Amino acid sequence: MKKRFAEGRIFYVNCKMPFEYFLDCFQWEHPFFLVSQLEDGRIAIVPNALVIPKTLWQAGYGPQDILPTEYEYVTTKWGAYPLIITAHPIYKVEEWFKKFERYVLPMCKQTLADFVNASFETLPLKFEPIRTPEALEV
Image 1: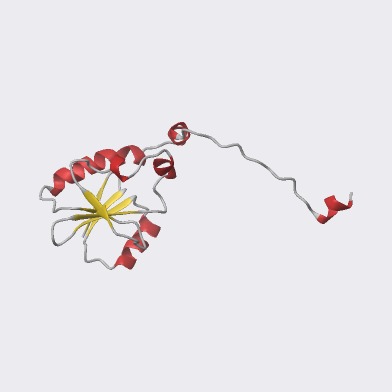
Image 2: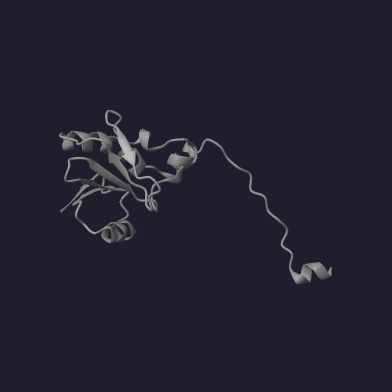
């Protein structure tokens, strides 16, 4: 079972899917998040570390800025892959999804100009002179 939300950037998948399929899906489909409801009712959110815009994290934002704030979240300690889980079961899953989608949609439609304008600080590039054997002979 797979449903798509936020213009195909959030996939709702079966929690019994082998984890290697999650990684394959990230590589081939490029969603921003894979989301599953666990058997106990909690929701697991797996962000795609390959495609989530780094400006989201560089600008000081974090999961609290893209997840519905009415809920409490936890993560795995020393996990091998980023994972966010609601701390408690979610009974109105559709309501949670609508709120989550509302935060993710702007990232789906981000243009190059939006990306540049969202960068709060720039760093100068420093170029070192190229030292080739021919340059050293002069």
